[in-house]
Image (cartoon, rainbow, N blue to C red; front, side, top):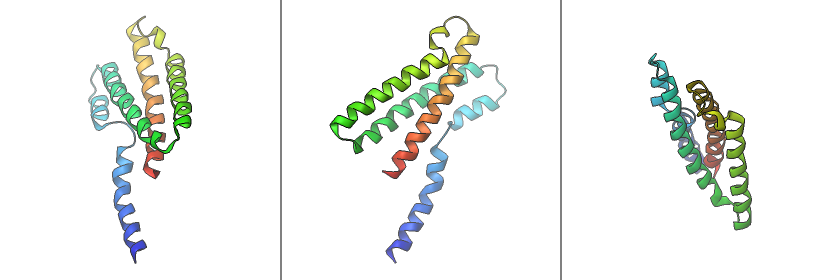
Length: 124
């Protein structure tokens, strides 16, 4: 009998969890508005998603031992450096085009990583 209620509780939580994964509604509205400020939309969303990634990363650390936390922190720092290098952070001051390219690339990578961590944290 208790298992039945547990299953219902999980089913009720799934839609809320699925909705939380991905881009914010503000970003989707900004992009769909037809505004020429697409670069600004991406930059604002990147800041939001970067904060989301940091919070989710901290949440997942609770399952690790102190030694493993150090390893995970090192891995996360490497991932951030690789993301910024791959997306051309060093070139974002060259022009608006490079800035847009960086924010779109970094945003996509950050959302994907945050989604992965969110799915993991959901299992905790």
